[in-house]
Image (cartoon, rainbow, N blue to C red; front, side, top):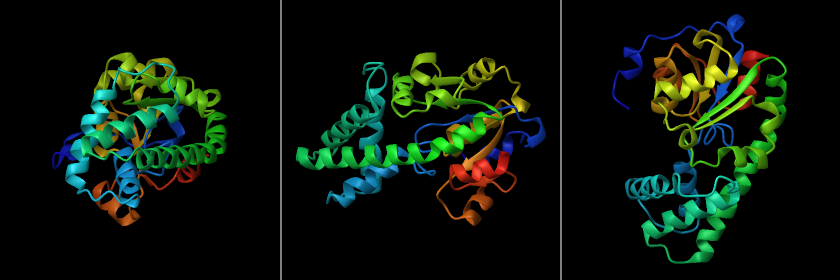
Length: 241
């Protein structure tokens, strides 16, 4: 992220008494405690014995990730989405052992579904008090993935970047969610794991932000001293319930 970018953006003040809507990122946020898909795939491939540098893996992952956007059915499940991505990453890394790829995909999916299931009770509590939405850079099948994970009952809007034609941190994708939730920017808060896409994007349109991160709290505070930092959705529930 460009140094000082967050400092250049007027920081909206988080006034809990005014909040009527909470927006969430999906990947790395609802399905993990602040760990992005790239980092989780890298850990799993390394645990399966694939010796790859972080830099080479990042190039392979982003190439595979970008190629998947808009090229899968809108009904594709989370498991099949992860399998496609794992296969494409493996091809970029020249990993030919399909048993390894299958184990990576299965472990990734199992971990994601376990976290999503654990987060359902938090989302249920929050949905009783707030209108909830998801704003995610995804592949065009986020609605199907959320139905599969049992998230649908708790969200009034699910915004998939491929469906609406805007990527975070573009202001338009946030405004689309706010319109669906009938909320003004100062009435909303965004919970996400990416400083560049989630935090900077939300702040640019005047939405307060909670950074969900697996990093130690002091690291989060050093990066974002004026913003709440959470290490799981339980922390988010504590902030707003």
